[in-house]
Length: 342
Image (cartoon, rainbow, N blue to C red; front, side):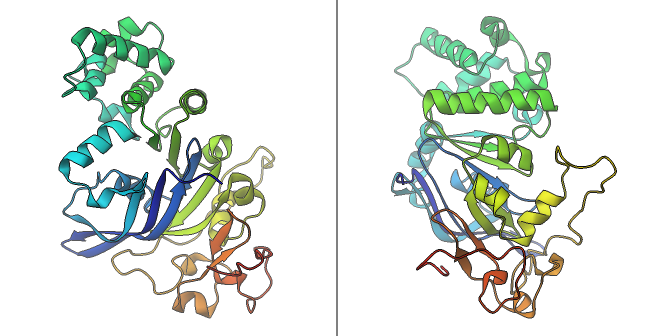
């Protein structure tokens, strides 16, 4: 198993508001390994985007603040970096592709100028070299007629082309990790497939690690090596993509899968939504955050946060249904020897 390039350890992140403190991310830990694609999936409001932005310290502080944890990049804690170190870290080590290119790109600037902004402060690169590197990166992300696109404004490009420009901006400094926050949400399925194919190609060519934030399980199935399932600011289940899909161990993960259409879904078959609403993160529940919506909820689920049960080196879940005294359900999995719980 490769050493992780990025590690989140017990991250707790909250926002102070007039109504109280929102506990957005609660004790989240995961690793990202060199060259892998890690998917973080969950409903809107589950904490996945806040978690991703914590990595680069992009959440506004205040009102946001870290209550605990570490974010280690190549062994160095991002939370202890000074302003200069943080600026260099954002500029060179990690790229971020935002959800909506329509609002992320500046409508008053030409595409080439927006990519070249990344080079500001690089006194060792001439203006001509900057342009050459910009054209090179446009070609790398599959933009045809790069010279023409270089001079165009964002409104002259299609949605898919804009998203490619966003990926180009993230790739300028050849970062070790790219965070993609729902990069295909505003695109139609054909363009979505092209963008996902592009990300796979870039991983192959550059060896870049990718964190894919999404609520779309189809995207997860297509490109992710490992998956983290989040709900209510916590991790419910984690594992390889195959383990998450074929050995599902948490009712929330199963609920996400049952709520979407599949290729083998009958024409007249109704999809099954997850009843209820996400928990109030002003005052999170004492027990499992999913307890109020779970069909298999037991008394202990409302009282105590579940322990983490491990089934393999990669696969684990935080669910009381794995306890030896819990009733038998389809979610029960054989526990890893010597790792009954974490």
